Amino acid sequence: MSGMRPTGRLHLGHLVGALGQWAEFCRVDEAFFEVADLHALTTAFEHTETIGPSTREMVLDWLAAGVDPERSAIYVQSHVPEISELHVLLSMIVPVAWLQRVPTYKDQIAALGPEIATYGFLGYPLMQLCDVAIVRADTVPVGKDQLSHLEFGREVVRRFNFLYGPTLVEPQATLSEFPDVPGIDNRKMSKSYDNQIDIADDEATTTKKVRSMVTDPQKIRRHDPGRPEICPVFSLQKIVNAPRVQWIEENCRSGALGCVDCKSELAEKMNDFLRPVRERRASLNAGDVVRILADGAQKVRAIAKETLADVKSAMKLP
Amino acid sequence: MSGMRPTGRLHLGHLVGALGQWAEFCRVDEAFFEVADLHALTTAFEHTETIGPSTREMVLDWLAAGVDPERSAIYVQSHVPEISELHVLLSMIVPVAWLQRVPTYKDQIAALGPEIATYGFLGYPLMQLCDVAIVRADTVPVGKDQLSHLEFGREVVRRFNFLYGPTLVEPQATLSEFPDVPGIDNRKMSKSYDNQIDIADDEATTTKKVRSMVTDPQKIRRHDPGRPEICPVFSLQKIVNAPRVQWIEENCRSGALGCVDCKSELAEKMNDFLRPVRERRASLNAGDVVRILADGAQKVRAIAKETLADVKSAMKLP
Image 1 (spheres, each protein chain N blue to C red):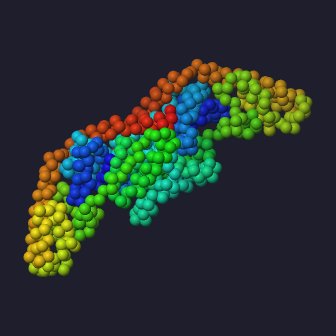
Image 2 (cartoon, one colour; image 1 turned 135 degrees about the horizontal axis):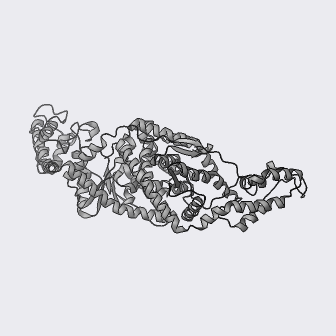
Image 3 (cartoon, chains in turn yellow, blue; image 1 turned 120 degrees about the vertical axis):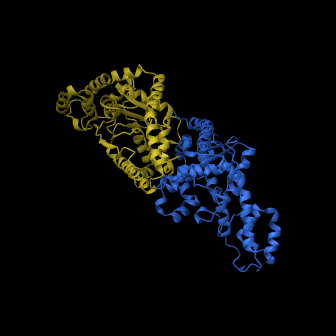
């Protein structure tokens, strides 16, 4: 089970990172992919008008990247009421102090300001557990920064099972380490830096972005020797142009390859790499997304209802 | 809209207090009466096995007292998922500090110990608002000790309507002041003092309890003058034996009436007073309760789904 907040169009970093892994999950096991709109509310409750369009664009990218709706459930968090019900039930056994101790809580307040400290924001790691627990997921891919959330969630599961008998599955982490994908300014590729190459960009836009990339600042003239290890153009060549990487490295270092030519080749290969994904994306429309999300919610709710019934029964609710 | 935690059998204090008012509400307007099982979990999450039986006994008492399931909705809180969904959505706009400032939060932690400070317990006043808001209730009967909760709830509604446009109803309080009903030991009648006369007691038990009541400690011998104003037997006479109150007062003060006789008369009148309620109770069974709660949940959910759809649409969720 995994999910993303609906942030809109995804980029190359997502494609070679999480989405590649998700497409692989679909091939090997039952998989659940959630549009975490409730999580989005924890930090964006004042600007919700983008959640709907962002959901559509993001799911189109998921599908384009090969996440298979036939072999997984793709769904919107708020379309599964059982997640909220489970959240309320589990909230009764979770000390406030456990939530306040999750490291990201104080970090995020420091970063985003005290007005972010809502009741919903405080409960965010518990909601993450509910996302996982409601589908009885046994494996969750997490980055290092999310390990403390998962550990919190496992503690809640153990407390529940201790109080009411074995009912919930204690999820395991699979640590996900993806290659660092630099953006066109050589910082980490990220929408918040506006340095990304979007999956849904057209080829001309991609070419223009690649041509505007920074390179080794010491390689000023065409025949100056370059340092591929600090150049984001070279990092992206490794991703989309693997067979040519050795040649490029040698000729950059020697000064035989100029940055303009190197970028032209990258732009071409980048578009080659993204073309099948973009073609799949173009073959889909908003109606497909609506249908897939409705199917996904139905699939998830069938399991979620069972989990919730077990939880209520373990808690001896009327 | 009003509700009670499922605490089991109710007593005379409930009957002449809240339940009398509820029966009256049914006669004048659309009314909603909730078994607050989720609220019960906020303080009793370690002892949930009583919630089911307590729900059944309590609802039997509601019905016996004249709360009319045809003219109201009687339902269990956890049977209405929309309450939990609304709770999660509203949690996003409620600062943690608002909840921490509700006076009862710190009071209850001081009274019940720090282990009560769970995330669910902290969110209790917000859940109360959701109970009210989900059925668009405009009026809530509250005691003075609950006024701060209602004021908190009104503030949440105003914040929601400010952020997302007018959607939720700002509930008004009707301050409820009921006569003080003393228990057999002259403290406030309460299950926690084990000094109550239960609606469901049989007549022999009631008679025995009345005979064991404390009276004016200065009236030691039969003909000593008594002070009705400090005697719980006299307080209960006022409730169940109004036509005889003046005579009793005079003859207690003069010493003409002894406590044994006074209690005998009270026991008889108490049983007369409770007999029709008890007969109605005896005519009902657990199956009736199940059916009434199922009907009630269905009625409430029809409204709750509409409210929730309005809320989600105002928040522009996908």
